[in-house]
Image (cartoon, helix red, strand yellow):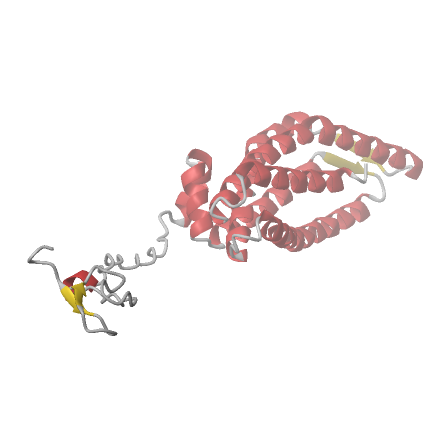
Length: 280
C-alpha cells in the first residue's frame, strides 16, 4: 500500500483500512465512503454573461415635407412623399385638393352652360332654373366631396390591415392625397372642353321641339362622358390607386402589401365611377 494512501477506520471493528475500500478487510463490514473535499473555487457557479441593456425606443417620426411640397411631391417623388404623408398625416393638403375639385366642377358646369343658347318665350325661366341648379350643384359638391372622402377613408382604414393598428388619420390623409390624381387629370383635360363640348341652341317657341333638343343634348353629353371622360377617369383611377397603395403600405408598416392596397383602391374607384354613370 502506498505511503500517501489515505486511511479510514472501520466503524465495526476499528481496523484501519484504505479510504478507497468498500468493505473492511478484517470483518467484512460495509464501509461508508467519505465525500471528497472540494475547494470553494470548484463549487463556485459560473457567472452568467451580462445581458445588454434594452435598446431605447425609436424616436418619433419627423415630418419632412411641407404641404406645398407634398402636393408637388406626389407627382414627382411619390414613394418618399406618400411615406411622409402616411407617417406624419395632415388634412391641410387634403382640403386643398377637395376644394380644387369642387372649383373645377363648377367651372366645367359654367362652361357647359355658356355653350347652350336659349331662345323663345321661356328663355328667362330656363336661365333662372339653370342658375338655381348651378347653386345646388355647388352646395352638393361641397357636401359630397368630404363625405365620399371620409367613407372611403374608413373603408381603407378597416380593410387596409387590422394587425398594424394604424391610425385613422393616416388612412384619411393617404386617401385624401391620392385624390390629387383626379385633380391633375381634370386640370389637364379642362382645356379640351371647348373642342369636345357641343354648342347647342334650344328654341322654346315650341315645347315639343325644345324637348327634342334637350334629349339630343343629353345624348351628346352621354357620348362625351363615355368616349372622352371615361378614359381620363380610368387614368386617374390607376394613378390614384398607385398613390393610395404606396401610402397604405407605409402607413401599415408593410403589414398590408402594396398590391393588396392597390386592388382595394381600384375596386373602390370602380364603384364610384359606376355610380356616376348609373343614370345613363
